[in-house]
Image 1 (tube, rainbow, N blue to C red):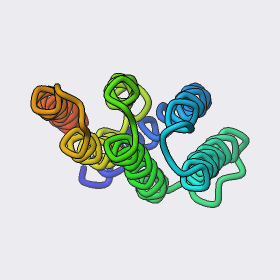
Image 2: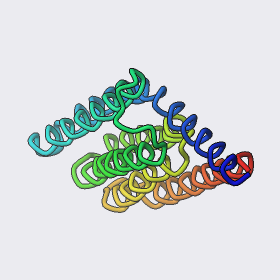
Image 3: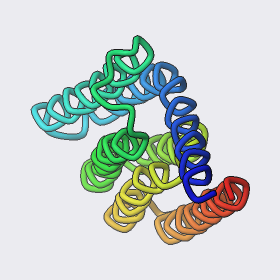
Image 4: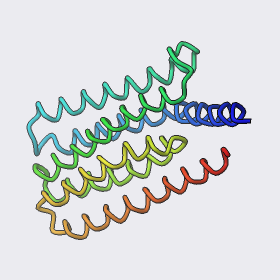
Length: 194
């Protein structure tokens, strides 16, 4: 009985990994498009070398994510252990969320209020996209969303935007709502897999 539960839980986790990997191409395309918008928005406001380094890092992370998804889809993956895939995806998601949060910090330091408002809308959308892109793996979604939310809050607090207080409060509320949604998903999946 215990072995059946283990295999059933493993099958569910593998299905969650596969579902998230199937969304990788769309997420990568959207992320690169958004990175171009951030770079164009910040280009007139910040140091070009920092912006270029940020874009190349985002592109590198996108390449790693896409390569991981392709290798898995072609059966070339080095492991069939869903926990190993989830750890790797969590690491990529955490670094990616940190980089996107960093864009908000850069925006808070360098951007005009109008430029920063555009970045804030974009990163709010990126937080919501985490639920879709990483939704099958809720813990991975949180690993992406937390550093992005922290960077967004820091960016609002550093910005000269007259709506900084309201923006900080809104992003904090949005992060709480998204986190609760993700955690509810974990609870439902954990209950369903029993």
